[in-house]
Image (cartoon, rainbow, N blue to C red; front, side, top):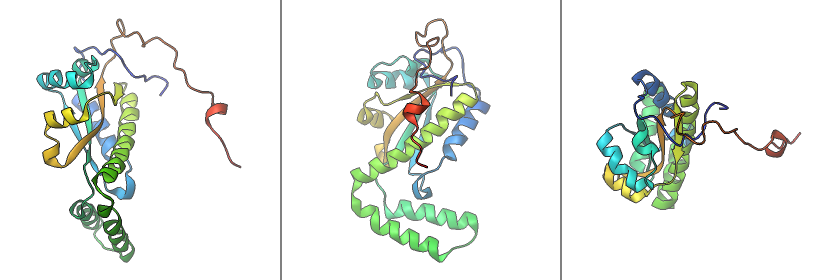
Length: 205
Protein backbone atom coordinates (compact mmCIF):
# COMPACT_ATOMS: atom_id res chain seq x y z
CA UNK A 1 0.00 0.00 0.00
CA UNK A 2 2.99 2.28 0.42
CA UNK A 3 4.03 1.40 -3.14
CA UNK A 4 0.69 2.12 -4.81
CA UNK A 5 -0.73 5.52 -5.63
CA UNK A 6 -3.51 6.86 -7.85
CA UNK A 7 -1.55 6.75 -11.08
CA UNK A 8 -2.20 9.86 -13.16
CA UNK A 9 -0.35 8.85 -16.32
CA UNK A 10 0.08 5.31 -17.58
CA UNK A 11 2.33 3.80 -20.22
CA UNK A 12 -0.02 2.47 -22.93
CA UNK A 13 2.70 0.22 -24.34
CA UNK A 14 2.72 -1.93 -21.18
CA UNK A 15 -0.02 -4.54 -20.88
CA UNK A 16 -1.02 -6.41 -17.74
CA UNK A 17 -0.53 -10.14 -18.30
CA UNK A 18 -3.58 -12.38 -18.30
CA UNK A 19 -2.22 -14.23 -15.25
CA UNK A 20 -1.96 -11.05 -13.19
CA UNK A 21 -5.32 -9.82 -14.42
CA UNK A 22 -7.02 -13.07 -13.44
CA UNK A 23 -5.64 -12.88 -9.90
CA UNK A 24 -6.91 -9.32 -9.54
CA UNK A 25 -10.34 -10.27 -10.87
CA UNK A 26 -10.46 -13.27 -8.55
CA UNK A 27 -9.76 -11.03 -5.56
CA UNK A 28 -12.75 -8.92 -6.56
CA UNK A 29 -14.92 -12.01 -7.04
CA UNK A 30 -14.01 -13.32 -3.59
CA UNK A 31 -14.55 -10.00 -1.82
CA UNK A 32 -17.20 -9.92 0.91
CA UNK A 33 -20.67 -8.49 0.25
CA UNK A 34 -23.70 -7.93 2.43
CA UNK A 35 -25.57 -11.22 2.92
CA UNK A 36 -23.28 -12.77 0.30
CA UNK A 37 -25.51 -11.47 -2.49
CA UNK A 38 -22.70 -10.16 -4.73
CA UNK A 39 -25.05 -7.47 -6.08
CA UNK A 40 -22.77 -6.21 -8.84
CA UNK A 41 -20.93 -7.41 -11.92
CA UNK A 42 -17.46 -6.62 -13.15
CA UNK A 43 -17.07 -5.40 -16.72
CA UNK A 44 -13.52 -5.65 -18.10
CA UNK A 45 -12.76 -3.36 -21.05
CA UNK A 46 -9.53 -3.62 -23.04
CA UNK A 47 -10.81 -2.74 -26.52
CA UNK A 48 -8.96 0.44 -27.55
CA UNK A 49 -11.82 1.76 -29.67
CA UNK A 50 -14.28 1.37 -26.82
CA UNK A 51 -11.90 2.97 -24.34
CA UNK A 52 -11.60 5.96 -26.68
CA UNK A 53 -15.39 6.27 -26.66
CA UNK A 54 -15.49 6.03 -22.88
CA UNK A 55 -12.86 8.74 -22.33
CA UNK A 56 -15.13 11.72 -23.17
CA UNK A 57 -17.75 10.59 -20.64
CA UNK A 58 -14.98 10.29 -18.01
CA UNK A 59 -13.98 13.96 -18.24
CA UNK A 60 -11.28 13.08 -20.79
CA UNK A 61 -9.02 11.58 -18.14
CA UNK A 62 -5.90 10.24 -19.82
CA UNK A 63 -5.72 6.99 -17.89
CA UNK A 64 -8.85 5.75 -19.67
CA UNK A 65 -7.03 5.39 -22.98
CA UNK A 66 -3.57 4.76 -21.54
CA UNK A 67 -4.53 1.88 -19.27
CA UNK A 68 -4.18 -1.80 -20.03
CA UNK A 69 -7.67 -2.64 -18.73
CA UNK A 70 -10.60 -0.66 -17.42
CA UNK A 71 -12.74 -2.28 -14.74
CA UNK A 72 -16.34 -1.10 -14.48
CA UNK A 73 -18.10 -2.05 -11.26
CA UNK A 74 -21.75 -2.28 -12.29
CA UNK A 75 -24.22 -2.63 -9.43
CA UNK A 76 -27.67 -4.17 -9.60
CA UNK A 77 -30.22 -1.47 -10.30
CA UNK A 78 -32.54 -3.10 -7.76
CA UNK A 79 -32.90 -6.04 -5.39
CA UNK A 80 -35.58 -8.29 -6.83
CA UNK A 81 -36.95 -11.56 -5.44
CA UNK A 82 -35.42 -13.35 -8.44
CA UNK A 83 -31.95 -11.98 -7.73
CA UNK A 84 -32.12 -12.68 -4.01
CA UNK A 85 -33.46 -16.20 -4.55
CA UNK A 86 -30.80 -16.97 -7.15
CA UNK A 87 -27.99 -16.36 -4.66
CA UNK A 88 -29.68 -18.28 -1.85
CA UNK A 89 -30.35 -21.19 -4.21
CA UNK A 90 -26.74 -21.12 -5.39
CA UNK A 91 -25.52 -21.25 -1.80
CA UNK A 92 -27.75 -24.23 -1.03
CA UNK A 93 -26.56 -25.98 -4.18
CA UNK A 94 -22.88 -25.38 -3.49
CA UNK A 95 -23.09 -26.37 0.16
CA UNK A 96 -25.31 -29.35 -0.51
CA UNK A 97 -27.83 -28.68 2.23
CA UNK A 98 -30.58 -26.33 3.36
CA UNK A 99 -30.88 -25.02 6.91
CA UNK A 100 -33.91 -23.52 8.59
CA UNK A 101 -31.96 -20.50 9.78
CA UNK A 102 -30.69 -19.75 6.28
CA UNK A 103 -34.18 -20.06 4.80
CA UNK A 104 -35.59 -17.76 7.47
CA UNK A 105 -32.89 -15.25 6.60
CA UNK A 106 -33.91 -15.53 2.91
CA UNK A 107 -37.53 -14.73 3.86
CA UNK A 108 -36.38 -11.74 5.90
CA UNK A 109 -34.45 -10.28 2.97
CA UNK A 110 -37.31 -10.94 0.55
CA UNK A 111 -39.69 -9.08 2.84
CA UNK A 112 -37.26 -6.20 3.45
CA UNK A 113 -35.21 -5.41 0.33
CA UNK A 114 -37.60 -5.36 -2.67
CA UNK A 115 -40.19 -3.09 -0.98
CA UNK A 116 -37.55 -0.45 -0.19
CA UNK A 117 -37.47 0.84 -3.77
CA UNK A 118 -34.92 0.79 -6.62
CA UNK A 119 -32.81 3.84 -5.76
CA UNK A 120 -32.18 2.87 -2.14
CA UNK A 121 -31.40 -0.67 -3.25
CA UNK A 122 -29.01 0.52 -5.96
CA UNK A 123 -27.13 2.70 -3.47
CA UNK A 124 -26.78 -0.29 -1.15
CA UNK A 125 -25.56 -2.49 -4.00
CA UNK A 126 -23.10 0.20 -5.11
CA UNK A 127 -21.52 0.24 -1.65
CA UNK A 128 -20.90 -3.49 -2.00
CA UNK A 129 -19.19 -2.80 -5.34
CA UNK A 130 -16.84 -0.40 -3.54
CA UNK A 131 -15.78 -3.22 -1.23
CA UNK A 132 -14.91 -5.27 -4.31
CA UNK A 133 -13.01 -2.36 -5.81
CA UNK A 134 -10.90 -2.07 -2.67
CA UNK A 135 -10.03 -5.76 -2.88
CA UNK A 136 -9.01 -5.16 -6.50
CA UNK A 137 -6.83 -2.18 -5.57
CA UNK A 138 -4.95 -4.19 -2.95
CA UNK A 139 -4.61 -7.23 -5.24
CA UNK A 140 -3.25 -5.01 -8.00
CA UNK A 141 -0.66 -3.57 -5.62
CA UNK A 142 0.40 -7.11 -4.64
CA UNK A 143 0.91 -7.81 -8.35
CA UNK A 144 2.80 -4.50 -8.77
CA UNK A 145 0.13 -3.37 -11.20
CA UNK A 146 -0.83 0.29 -11.00
CA UNK A 147 -4.46 1.25 -10.50
CA UNK A 148 -6.60 4.34 -10.26
CA UNK A 149 -10.11 4.32 -8.79
CA UNK A 150 -12.39 6.88 -10.45
CA UNK A 151 -15.74 8.41 -9.66
CA UNK A 152 -15.27 11.16 -12.23
CA UNK A 153 -17.51 9.94 -15.05
CA UNK A 154 -21.03 10.34 -16.36
CA UNK A 155 -22.61 7.13 -15.15
CA UNK A 156 -25.72 7.43 -17.32
CA UNK A 157 -23.60 7.93 -20.46
CA UNK A 158 -21.31 5.04 -19.53
CA UNK A 159 -24.30 2.81 -18.85
CA UNK A 160 -25.61 3.61 -22.32
CA UNK A 161 -22.25 2.92 -24.00
CA UNK A 162 -21.99 -0.47 -22.33
CA UNK A 163 -25.67 -1.38 -22.54
CA UNK A 164 -25.87 -1.84 -18.79
CA UNK A 165 -29.48 -0.74 -18.42
CA UNK A 166 -30.70 -3.69 -20.47
CA UNK A 167 -28.89 -5.98 -18.04
CA UNK A 168 -30.43 -4.35 -14.96
CA UNK A 169 -27.11 -2.76 -14.00
CA UNK A 170 -25.80 0.75 -13.28
CA UNK A 171 -22.14 1.77 -13.14
CA UNK A 172 -21.02 2.65 -9.62
CA UNK A 173 -17.26 3.21 -9.89
CA UNK A 174 -14.47 2.45 -12.37
CA UNK A 175 -10.81 1.52 -12.00
CA UNK A 176 -7.92 1.55 -14.46
CA UNK A 177 -5.17 -1.07 -14.43
CA UNK A 178 -1.79 -0.60 -16.07
CA UNK A 179 1.72 0.65 -15.46
CA UNK A 180 2.92 4.08 -14.39
CA UNK A 181 4.69 6.33 -16.87
CA UNK A 182 7.54 7.20 -14.55
CA UNK A 183 8.94 9.88 -16.86
CA UNK A 184 5.70 11.83 -17.23
CA UNK A 185 3.52 11.25 -14.17
CA UNK A 186 3.83 14.31 -11.93
CA UNK A 187 2.64 12.32 -8.91
CA UNK A 188 4.99 9.35 -9.17
CA UNK A 189 7.83 10.65 -6.97
CA UNK A 190 5.81 12.64 -4.47
CA UNK A 191 5.71 11.47 -0.87
CA UNK A 192 2.57 9.60 0.15
CA UNK A 193 0.74 11.71 2.70
CA UNK A 194 -1.69 10.25 5.21
CA UNK A 195 -2.81 11.36 8.65
CA UNK A 196 -0.70 10.04 11.52
CA UNK A 197 -1.98 6.90 13.20
CA UNK A 198 -2.66 8.92 16.36
CA UNK A 199 -4.95 11.21 14.36
CA UNK A 200 -6.62 8.42 12.42
CA UNK A 201 -7.11 5.43 14.72
CA UNK A 202 -9.23 5.76 17.85
CA UNK A 203 -9.03 2.80 20.19
CA UNK A 204 -11.71 2.17 22.80
CA UNK A 205 -10.27 -0.04 25.57
